[in-house]
Image (cartoon, rainbow, N blue to C red; front, side):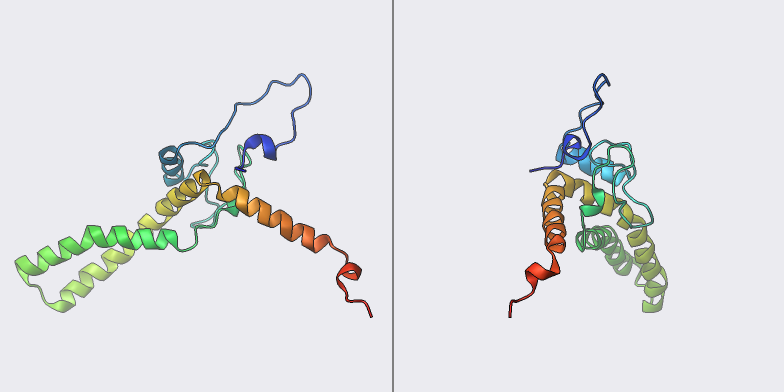
Length: 162
């Protein structure tokens, strides 16, 4: 079961006009919204609270974005993309000009670090958008509900009988 705004929000009071229906958007729309630091579901709220900290929930549609754990995918995609952008340039400069190794290190290492830092946040936003279309929110919500149910079991019921 995928997350929908209807399942998260309490029903509106009688006589109140219903808000806009927000369904899970298509993959490219969700990824583009995440890339722009916008909620993949509504496109209004922000994805990040800090540089790379995903907000607990969207401030506009209350989608549980904090349940989407991107983990290692954003750094992998960032390094992959930065490498494909800069390595051909590095090889071309080496072939054309043959600069000394110290000059390569002085130029390329900081440039790689800067490009990776600038790309990491938008790529993580896009991964969060991508994950939202795959239904990971619902899986995490179900797992969280099971953990909370297990925590509510009284200690007496879990203790072995003598």
